[in-house]
Length: 246
Ligand code: ADP
Image (cartoon, rainbow, N blue to C red; front, top):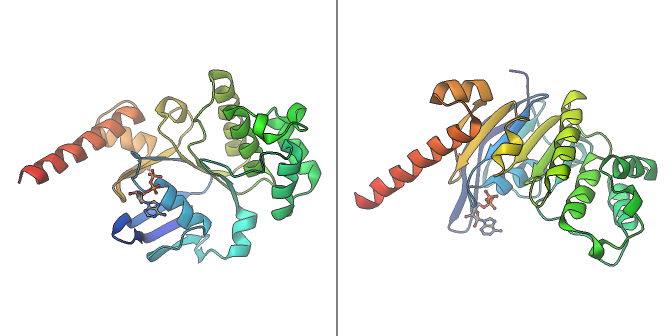
């Protein structure tokens, strides 16, 4: 595998809470990795460690075989957080320009991405008037600015109606086709299944499974990622019940 990103024994503790327990994961260049796991499994923490927003307690993340420097991060990553912090009384355009400038993108690039996500006509509206789906699209436009090599999307399908979901899947396919690597955390199996090339299943801060979709389906004797996920999560729950009884 030609890995562009490597998580080497990445661990994170928040006081007594162990959020990540030594995650070891290589991400193939140009792949679409689905990061699956229940709430609290550590998905956002793993993304935070990748993006330099969270300092791991142990381990490191490598980009092209080297530790990532902050200067690289700005150029390499586009990030859609689960909840984006914006200035509610300022317009879509003003908010967009603020973030675009921070990352060194020209206004024309913001305009291009706003058109692409279907938000250009709403650019003079204050952000507080936007629906959840529109906010999600604004966040996506900001993440897409500058054609990042890696797109990191935390729960991107939340709050989207079927038409928006279809539009987002199309854009993600275009990003994949231009060679970007995508890391997507989600609970929406029906949306990720047709997109993902690889998946990693995180349970209680540990990777319970990882591989290409074909490998995972074959290994677990299931015909869908959703069925693989439920099989692994069920196994973990019954193990926990046995531990409680013992
Ligand atoms: P996920 O994104 O899979 O829902 P998170 O990475 O948000 O999981 O959380 C993993 C674990 O770490 C959870 O038990 C969560 O409560 C805990 N956690 C996350 N952020 C913090 C924090 N800032 N302080 C303390 N505990 C945290």
